[in-house]
Image (cartoon, rainbow, N blue to C red; front, side):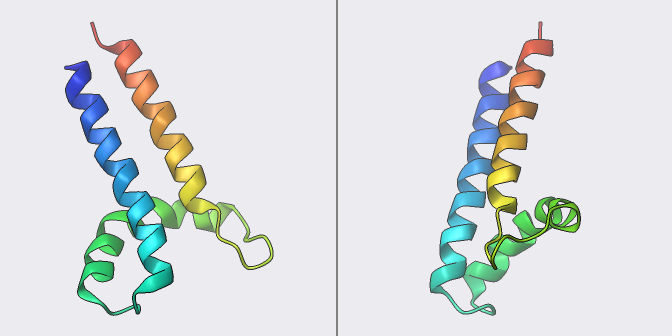
Length: 80
């Protein structure tokens, strides 16, 4: 069970990283970017509401990755 939890969180982390990188390269309405945004944006929006941008830089993906790692750790610790 812990392996499945790790895999799910690793995939989510990978998607967040790819989405952040793709946002620099692809236009906003590209199909790949739209697909990734549909997955990542619901997780990033609450963080963006609370956390301000610093000099135009958006650190919400970094915070999301840290939160995903924390949740993964806690879930694995709670598993029998």
